[in-house]
Length: 184
Image (cartoon, rainbow, N blue to C red; front, side, top):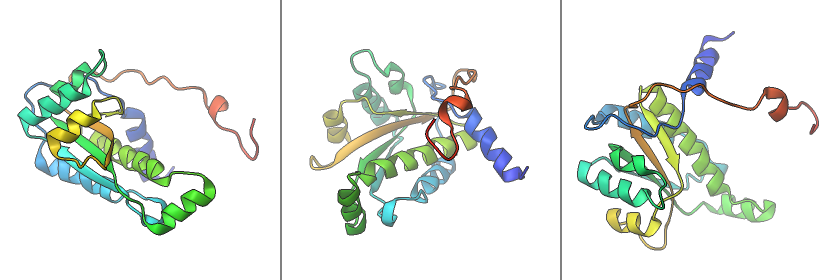
């Protein structure tokens, strides 16, 4: 087996949604830069790159963003995350827009999902935990970090040093999710 491939499977297996971070332990700038570079290099439909990544790592602002992410009993841990990477949907290029209309698909949402996967896997490779969140007070966070009203804030990815041990990953068996050459 090719060693790089095996390493990627180890990384994919290790990655989990971490919902507890070591309080007071900041994430090093060089680690954040490598994570952001992985996001920047993510593929996108027609190379549109329809994203903007806003890194919130100033401690007081991170707590405020975390509080806006916690609501109705959800995501209470977010206020303890030392870093939030906010993902804003930007306008796609004309090729992506036309292709999306023709195929009835909104490619930027797919593209942002791919970039989010790159972020979470890059964080894992740096020894950091992450959690991709879609439940938050969009209006409050936009106001806190100056995102224009016309833009959509789609995801908040929390990043930090995990405070808990890895859990056993539970996934459906391969036979339930994979078939070859036809839908079964």
